[in-house]
Image (tube, rainbow, N blue to C red):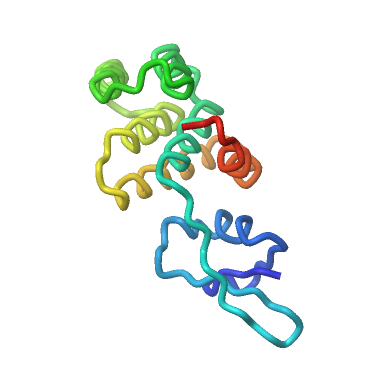
Length: 158
């Protein structure tokens, strides 16, 4: 059984499940422990490449945001057709200009996913991935573990 130290009530059979469900990638100081009877072993937390986290954020946002501008960009970016930084800024600005006042959660999720691509520092990228997931979770239930596992296991993605 695996458990993040701060998550005393929740125990998982897979270290990645413990990591993602505790938002472990947003808290670098969390420690992952494997419990075997009365013995506990510290386990290295999974290191997920930043690009995979960005892909994960985009895929999460696609579950809730159907804005044609975002969907077209996301599909092109995910397929590798257009990953230019200028395009990311262009799409971000288009989405922001269209709705200058209160931003609905689905669009906020899309903007956070876009910002995870715009960001340069790993800590900023991780923060925006986390915000994307938070926005999505306020709209719908999504099996984040399954989606992240698919992204991690897909060697073709990158």
